[in-house]
Image (cartoon, rainbow, N blue to C red; front, side, top):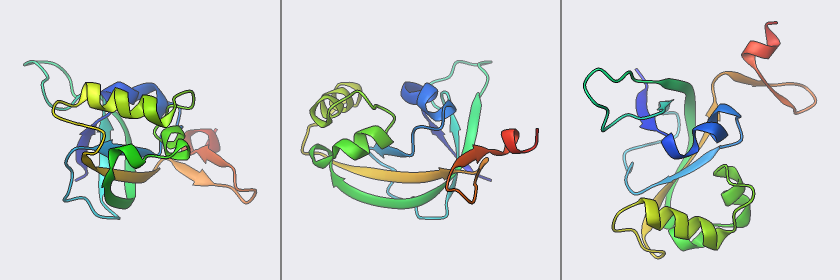
Length: 131
């Protein structure tokens, strides 16, 4: 069974398959090959609230790094193409209690399990492929 992970702040980027990286304050136990089910919200749901599953992914890479070392390319991979690295750091610290720019965070990179690569290196969803 896949582990659950909330993506409430970036749900649109996940649904559009333009998010391939996330940073977390924890998640030290993750390893390449781990499967995750990305959900709208996991913890903090009220009794009776549904668990909205978005997509399954497979972890490709996990590493610890300082938050303020994020690159412009990684900001885009996080699903924020119009944000600067400094803007991302400010956003992350604002939404994660106790986080500062020099905090160590876990960088997680994944691939979507419902996509395939075509010979011309384009990616398509399995839903599109079976139409």
